[in-house]
Image (tube, rainbow, N blue to C red; front, side):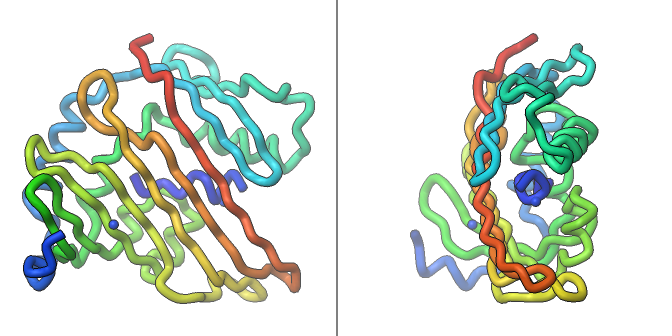
Length: 224
């Protein structure tokens, strides 16, 4: 689920349990991924992408060409860089963004942070293999993550990817804040998908400051 989609467009209780640790993905996470991969279906859905510069409504249909289509505004109203961003989204969108995605098997250094009767929250280290975005793979080791998982019928309810401190991913580019929070909701098959992704990236590039906040919401999930 570590797709870093929104940053491309504009571009996780009981204190006594916090000492328990494991460096491998817990069995509950592996169960969640396996259950999701078995149950996932080619749903149709709508997606809203909102930032300081964007206010898009998109629709995904597994039998459309392209499968992801811009509903508003008109593609003729887009600037060239926005058209390129839309094209990248269309090329990378493979269907409903499941929270317990196959990439979550590939996270490292998983450690229990806290738990209660219903859920457990773990920290983890993103790896290049756990991130789909080619841009973000280059600085995967700069990032950290957290996820919350249900104990009954294990599934993810929340995922966060963030940079604990500022860094420079390339010459003349400095990132002061990088934070992505994914909130999950149940699809018709009962497995959870990324219903809302809030991304915040702040820093400077080639002498120009930037501060980008993007909200991506996925809704109206239904069988086509």
